[in-house]
Image (cartoon, rainbow, N blue to C red):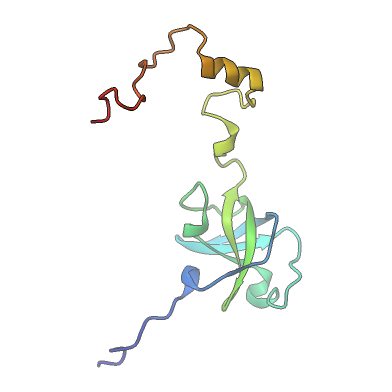
Length: 144
């Protein structure tokens, strides 16, 4: 009764202060998922004093997933490695096959535009592509 009154809550789980350990993404397999958090077994052993904690697995939380809300056991992921007061974890997690915003629009061919493609698009090619002329031009009244 009144046990926790006046005490400030300390950060826990995904809210603990973190130190990023990786400059490039590593990979691993999801070995456990509990709804909002789980564990990844890294593909390569991590060389860090805390690596043996949690049976060598890395903590993952749903707020660290880049393009998904959850993971399935067996999924292969790519991530940055971090350490916190509880051990090692993974952040900026992407599952193999996740949508990549740099890969182009859905249904596109995934090809990068050449400089010539951009020039043609910027100048307009005389084709009616369905865009409203001047709709995004300041002062035309469309945003007032």
